[in-house]
Image (cartoon, rainbow, N blue to C red):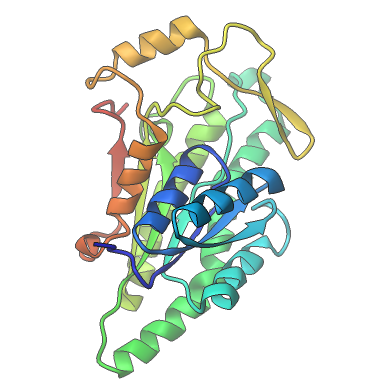
Length: 275
């Protein structure tokens, strides 16, 4: 049974990691998916993988921070699939430092990608959601649409060395709560998922200082010291980090018809670890 048959979803940052797993899960459940990544190669790989399992997919390449991207992202769904039912704001990365060493650029860039970009994408979708809700109400229909914003337990409980990331991920919870109140009349469920330790390329164990990713010309260190990672995993009640597929499952739950009366909530997907 494909719970999302006929639905159209956009998933930011879905070329790799958790975002890719979310796009794959939604596609397998019947949704038509607009994949996004900053880089063309990973986005096209996700498109190929979804096509391989018989899914419906197109790509919208670009930075969520770019001028006009939000409108382009929404337009890709409307032009490519004729609608928009699900928005997953997932794109992001971390750029850590203690506060006395954190630069203005570090602070602002993380707020931009994790909070301002989702705000712009949601704002770009507002007219479509409002117009569709009006038409459906006039026809006596009650059709629900879904927003799932990605937060973190750093946003719900804070994390040392991540003042920028914690602030942004806390902000996305506030944005979620506000929009659940604004958009309830349009039958849009707006929720968030706060991830704990999920194994991705950003959180893999690394013994050296050389692991990094390129984000719009910036070399951002990634990875976690193996000893620190082992200690963190011991604090998780379920005894291990989550997989991207498990993370995607929590997002999928909030996209299903069974979640039609859930809105304004933050679900923690952390294996029992919540702070």
